[in-house]
Amino acid sequence: MASRTILGWPRILAMTIIALTATVAPLPDLLQVLRPDFVALTVLWLCLLSPRLTGLFHAWGAGLALDAFRGVLFGQHALAMVVIAYVASKLRLQIRAFPPLQQAAVILALLWLYEFLLFWIDGVSGHPVTDWRRWLAVPVGAACWPLITGLYARFATKR
Amino acid sequence: MTNHESDSRPLLLGGPALGLRLIVLVIMSIGLMVADQRQHHLAVIRDWLSAAAYPFQWAVQAPLAAWDGARESLATRSRIEADNIRLAADNLVLRLKLMRFDSLAQENQRLRAASASSARVVQRSLVAEIVRVDLDPFRQRVLVNKGSRDGVFHGQAALDANGIFGQVTRVGPVSAELILISDPEHAIPVQVNRTGTRTIALGTGRSGQLSLPYLPQNSDVVAGDLLVSSGLGGVFPPGYPVAQVSVVQHDPSQPLLSVTAAPLAALDSDPEILLVWFDSVVVEPDPSSEPEPPAVPAPTGGPGGN
Image 1 (cartoon, rainbow over the protein chains, first blue to last red):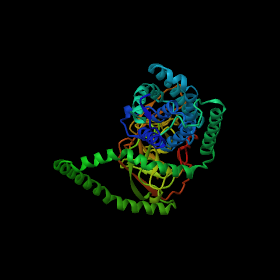
Image 2: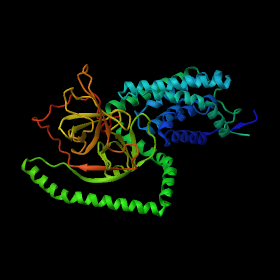
Image 3: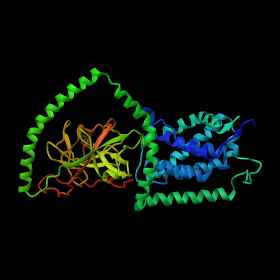
Image 4: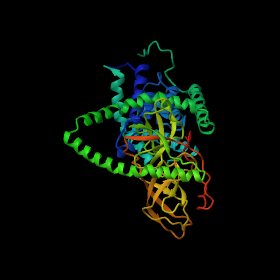
């Protein structure tokens, strides 16, 4: 490989913080419901591409930070994040070998699992959000996947 | 920088270590959720975490705020003059109303003293600016730039110029999170101003709509009725406007009316709100008036309600 990774903890921290701020940045109402979960996408990317540096503990920390940012039940995003990070880490060798479209399909499934866990925890904890539009973030996130991988690959490597 | 040659960590992940970490972290997450939900042990930690997140949240909206500020300072002279004329006219009307208010307030106080009930009006207020971040598109929550340093407390009522806005759910040192009256987890005790009927207005998750699901078919409510806060529960000051009834649907097959109302406060466009202090004595409902509304299934979204 011609490129060499320069991904270290400072960059991983920066990526996480940027993803967190992107999750709460103000948007018009219409775009708000279409906003993908940038933190989940970042965690998935790191789990697939850089599993030796990050892993479940990073996913958990990022999930807790997201809980604090959005002011929801503490531990909710952390749990969902850890589960999808586990699946992604476990299957990463297969997923990395997939062509882009198939990769996006796997991401779609993982994001759906993530959103489903959140939906389920919302319901169990007595704060149900039954608005169907909450599921829109899942296909939008999967559609953003090629973009995110391209962007992060530039950010994480130097030629 | 990762040096792959000298890295002794295993290249192939998985095995018991990964599964074990998953189980440990999942159990820790569930423990945190239970502690947060059931016992509210984490309230202090939550408040501090919100405080730690606040600088980032503030930084996110800073460019927008700066843009607004720049536009404001470059506003044209003619617009400012027009604003000035309009505000002067408004001021005149308000002063005219105030002239009567002083004497009415005194008279009211005398009458209250005679019937030995305390007048609960807002005594002190604090202007707080709304920090423009999107906390959650499906919940009606906002962040404001005043916190416990300014004396803000859990469950404090917030108003804007037109009516009741919401209440404080989380307080950091310099910021606080508010739940709006339109949040699906919020319920506010209200009174129909025209008839005195008491009921409860629930949020729907849409900023322009409240629902009043506990009114029986025979209750006297029509579109256009003003709903004011009844003050039961002691969270909100009584007598302040909350919403205006927009639709009343009579369905004879249902035991209850389906009523929706539009909040009077500009929930999604206010740049600033008022946090208020008032003498919160919990009044017993007057037994001679309308019967109590049924118990509310939804929590009032009060202190630590999340």
